[in-house]
Length: 227
Image 1 (cartoon, rainbow, N blue to C red):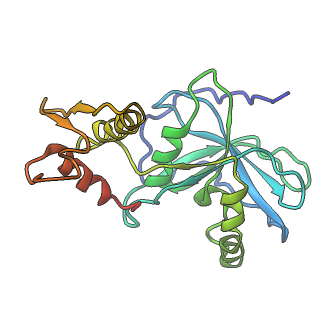
Image 2: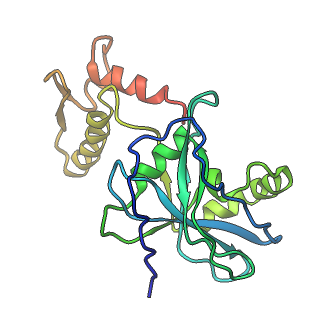
């Protein structure tokens, strides 16, 4: 049986500013040599405050199913946003109260995109910005050494490269269609936002494509910070 924590009442801001809310900040418990932290991302709607729980798991024990997130933190000089850590269990077994955690804009955007819809089931993730105490250099270095096993032990890896832009949604859909077309031996034809038909395989990756909208979309996609 999975416990669903009650959602906090009161007005929820749609956007967190870089100002410092006058609420307690989250502090980490120390990790053991074989420990990692995981987070449960609680369901919610798009503009609702992001709420998580954090718990410790031991790599020598049976790890729970979790997904590892590959993403970028975003602009290091960009705005910081806040998520709420609720109902976290400390090493002593004490259930903590609600705390705020400051995260980068890239971390915030990834969590918002990966969050289950309202009424769904909480999602268990490993995300370095939340699961590693970035202020503790010794812990950070120790967890970096574990990253290979953290990702290989995950049920799957989720890659977040950012929100849709420059026809990226059309591009990714066309890649999917191209894969299906290869299996059926039928050429895939997609339409970009300017309604120009493009035959995948004939014009996106071969031949003259200086003015090909799909080629421009591909170039813009591969220039994203994640790559």
